[in-house]
Length: 140
Image 1: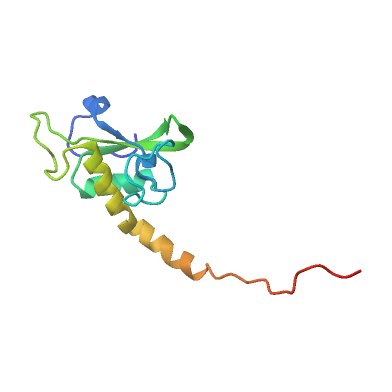
Image 2 (image 1 turned 90 degrees about the vertical axis):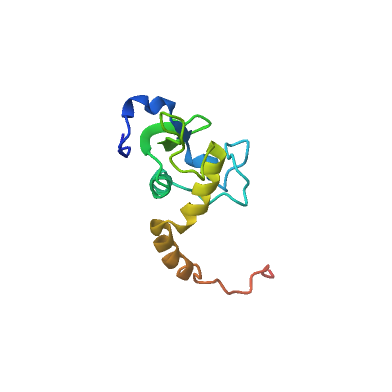
């Protein structure tokens, strides 16, 4: 396990909520595994981005990089998140269900520091060399 959970007993990690990046991927269909509305989902989230968003929301979480999503086993990694304490109280009062967690994380991922740096150079190199020519058939 890569990500270390914050001050929580790791023995009960099997009871934590499982969060695969596909759940909030706007590029995937519902049949492929997306679980929230495509308009609210984000584009190709990673486990580390989800992990960082969960720690930002002050939720105990851990990355399981060796695990794969069953419907798309080439997609490696998942995040385990703990929503409630032993006594049943919520770690973050605004997030009481898996669905709310997915919506909150999908909202935060596009603003992730690693993501905002990546997008700046990509937009400037989008205008590549354009091919100008007549085209069409040549006469024989």
